[in-house]
Image (cartoon, rainbow, N blue to C red):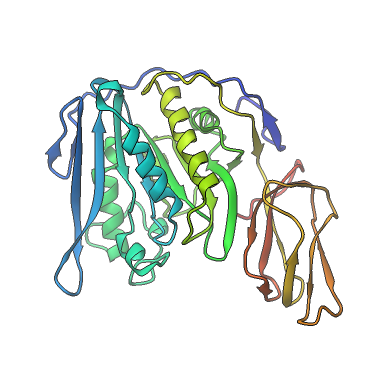
Length: 345
């Protein structure tokens, strides 16, 4: 890595050095449709039939630039209730012009169509799609959908950005999670320019792990909360994607360098020591000190309040939204300034 990996630090605003251009030679074909250079194609990729017999499909937009260059996929709603990425992709794709683009963008705003329709994180069989990659054409519904996405989208690309929010009843500060110990991925993440970038190891069955095994640098962008649009989270994501495309040489260089970002190797959730009503006293992005009070838990009358204190210094990157808590519930997620420790993503 280009910087010390054992503490949280603010990375300077100088732009990373762009990589040598990657020029895939094979034609760009998705769902059996070959997209000519300088063209845009909107297609629906069949996934499976509903119990009614109607076909359910993945909505995909392919923007194939006039000039050769990297191929970037954008995906959202792998968890069907995580909606910010859907609008991020809509805004990015709307402004892309094939005649001004070098390389290609494959945009899939809703991967877990089943979950989106049900406003659920999961598929109908309660499987988590982001624990089902690379999938199998003879497996479960989740496994088949994962295999289809790998074949038609990931295998076509040189880079990827997967867009998420926090889980239900939580919210996240805009952040990028990636393998920061991989040099190519580190520079890719830094170019995005999110307020925070976290080193996160690959989880078994995740899209990011499956892409890494194909040596495809991949970022996971987390911002906001489930089943809600958050304008700041959406705009930060849009701007980050454009910075990445400029870094890859897909669009013209941007006038301003990426903003400074906080880099972290360690995170931890502060949890409830008792059940009751949680009164949070801190906000996303706030810098806190070790032993600082994050709020208190009390009964319904406010009697016998119990303070919740941070076990380390750092920055608040996420917190629960529900004030009704049980003992052990996750309350506040902190990216730490400490040099040693573990992740608890």
